[in-house]
Amino acid sequence: MKIAFIGTHGVGKTTLCFELAACLKRLDVAVDVVKEVARNCPLPINRDTTCSAQEWILHTQVATEIATSHGYDTIVCDRAVVDNYAYMVHAVGRRPALETFIASWMKTYTMLVHVPVVAAPTFDGTRDTSVVFQRRIDEILCELMDEMGIPRVELDPGHRDSWIPAVLDEAGLPSHSPQLDLFNGLGHINFP
Picture 1 (tube, rainbow, N blue to C red):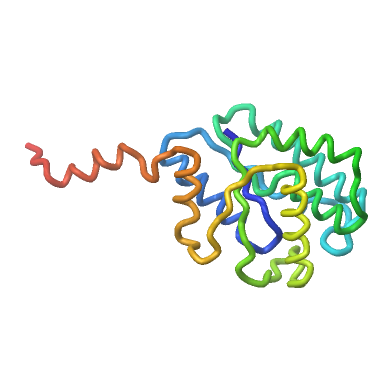
Picture 2: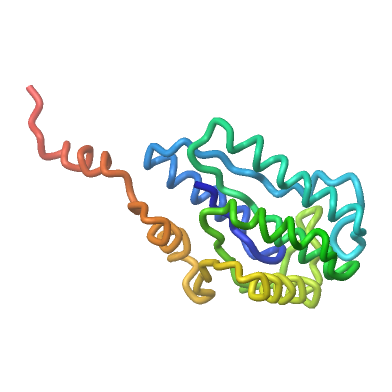
């Protein structure tokens, strides 16, 4: 299973990736996280990005997903290739030759979870803090997904506490480990 949290920067995708991975580990699922690759890009990113930078990010994302998927039942991705492409479209316009590949690669995800914009981005050493840029990337991303017919789970912006349970439910997974029920009952057992 490959689950990707998608959306613009500064919406909490990274936190959600690690929260979901922790839940899956408690369910005895062999899981790893594909971290956001843009932070390692040697070229300019954010509003200063270039076509070359976004190609590096997109292809590194794919390579990292391939490498991580060997050895784990499930991978949780901090972004998907369509996210990376949205930044490219914003910077340099559409690239039809890449769109065929992106549409094909998007079918490798079991589930895409769109994280809504609920607050302005905060500076973390890398992230762009422009609200206009943040929202425009999200608009482009949604336009691309709609145009390509890419299905996704939309998280309710008013209920952050329900996001991980909603993802687990959508994936058909329990919200807690069945083993916990066994241990919760141990307080009532009298040991000799």
